[in-house]
Amino acid sequence: MSRSEEIEMSDVIPEIESDSGSDMDEETGLTKRERRQKIHQQDQLDAQTGAHVPVTKHEARLADRDVVKKLLVNSVLILLWYIFSLSISIVSRATTWPSTARR
Image (cartoon, rainbow, N blue to C red; front, side, top):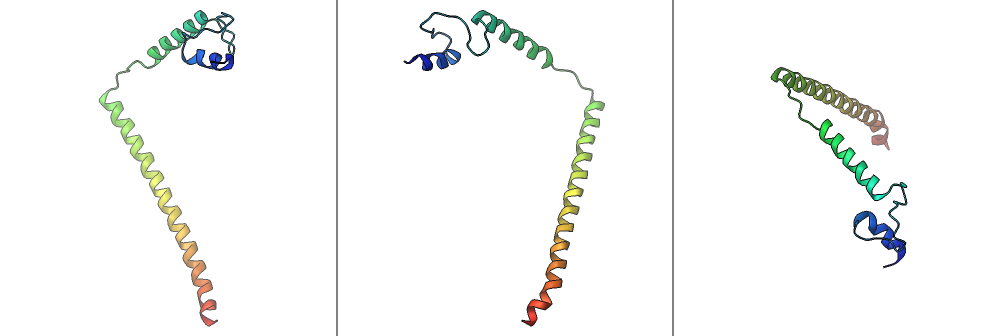
């Protein structure tokens, strides 16, 4: 295994040591211990922010109502856009059709 492959693989497989025996992470400048500590801190933060927050039935109902309202508004806007687009196509076709029929 070449030196560059070993360096790339050391990020994926921590058991592979470089030939120089250096513990430094070349991209971040952290030692393996510092990197493990940083990962551990990130895991703790993820656990704290990912904790389940109880939601009351009333709050869930309000959230569902808000989602439905936004869905309906978007649906109406999309429908209006298609009607507008179709009307432009029909008007364009109607104004050019008689002239093409005479030829």
